[in-house]
Image (cartoon, rainbow, N blue to C red; front, side):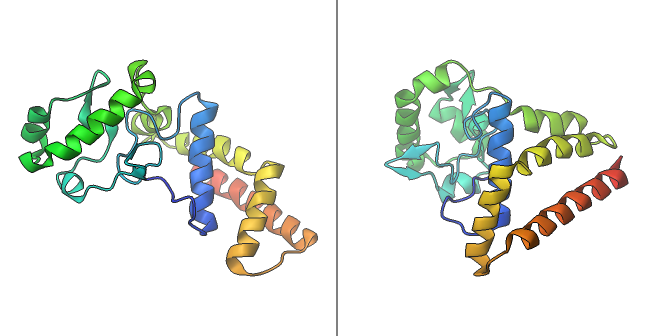
Length: 187
């Protein structure tokens, strides 16, 4: 999962990002600094003040931290060349990433945990009803009052509409009802 740009006005993408971040924080894992965290467009991994976006690396199928790390240490450049057919001219990018790792060794050194959500999905995602259980936990957080009110403001801004209190309450109730119906269909 790539991170959602912080300036993206789409309320659905923002809601997904909020759910992803909240779920990881509830589980005690940084949402964008875990073993399977994306390298590209990840605001938690910045070189020269910008999130990484290296087309040549991306084109070689390098997508996540765990692909370039081995026991929380950056793999040697020669190994990346062998594994991903990375071109030797990319050494400068490698050195930039190495510098980032050195600057953030306190985060990297204690060990990047695997994302428990990704591990859960890989292990249990194929069984009926398991996804509904995960969905129920995540959606209950999304329907907390502060999150719902923030979502209302985002939607009003994005859609250039004003939702009256009663209309918004009906919308949230309808969403909550559809959630229950969806859960009944999947369990």
